[in-house]
Length: 254
Image (cartoon, rainbow, N blue to C red; front, side):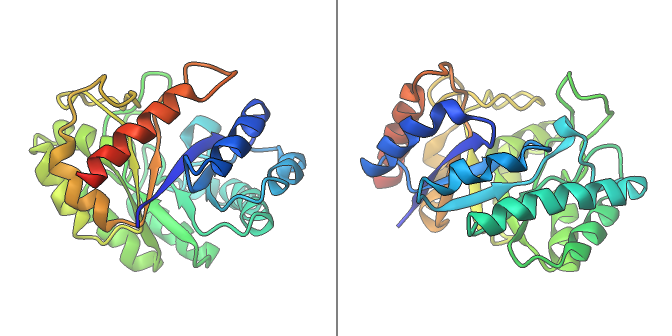
């Protein structure tokens, strides 16, 4: 049975009451909590929810860069904060990005050094978002992700949108790239809609892009955990998330 995840940040206190109600109504099955650094004081409020968790480590937006050997000490500090949440919430997984402007083998080395069995490496687009001060993301091909996964002895999180963006940057058919990534036995998926000719990650709500969900049905059904990573237009409700859940369940059940 597919379990659907709600993506939130550890600073999103505004969504907590809504999340509690939606979980009781069985709209979603777990929360994937992104860890904004220097907010360890917020752990207790998430512990009160009694909801299953996955945890997402900080990424380039918060200066974690596992592909930079000069940031090993800083990266480890951020990992420790992430571990603090993962331990306190009994998280099933910890998801990591490879970083920017660096060496994917260095990212593999740093993840291995954490020695955390919950670790998953997530594939990235090649072309960076415009607000990120970097030339390219690290860990953008199936070959690189295979190396990281095997060297670090970690699992793999397949991000559908990221795979499409990277495929377009590398001039490969997007759905063929997804197929290649699926052979790495992902433990979980990240999914949102997207314009399938773009190189930039979009996180569109379902139906606003042109992603062919019919081509993903088998993959969706075979992966146990699927986190919806679509935009949230309101800080007062999660109505757009509810619509996306309904859309995804229809796809899965067809």
